[in-house]
Length: 250
Image (tube, rainbow, N blue to C red; front, side):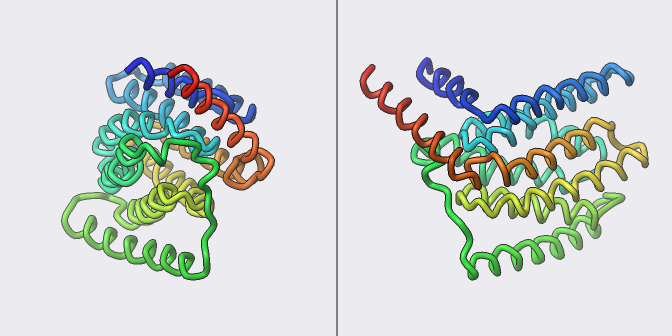
């Protein structure tokens, strides 16, 4: 357990400076949103979820595998928030993240080790598979959630779910093309949570959270090891040195 805590602590270090700036900007916005409204159990859980969620996506941006631990905790909060807003597919979205990304990351020793050195790119075939899969998930989930639940926004909920689910799978497979999907996901979630807020079903915090996610996704194309070769080599060197220090201590 001691070594695992040390590992988590290490994974929160060595990020691009812009990631830390974005986290504290998000934290400030969320604090102002929290204190500017009636404080309830739901608003507090939303605050905790959005804070951990931003840390999670920033960790992915920095090619740090602490996102598995942060993702599980934030998902619990977002599931409660999604249920309260009747955005039922946002609940399945979080369950899918946990099942396809967070738990495998937590259980897979190989995924956690020097993840920046394992980044891949799509081929033409994988582009087709990813796009067709997104469209299929959208159609099936939109029909299902609209038919069997009282979700007031089934097709808006469905597009957010379809894009986010596909992005999570692409991320776990270590393709940098995930950020095309993450940007689309951020836009879809902003629309979903803004409509939910306008209809009185959610707090503004979820819209702000989606906005921060979108900023993070745009940043990924410039500073993240997923796209920036110089940053990738820096992280690989950092992780290699960390692994060597652990071996020498043992």
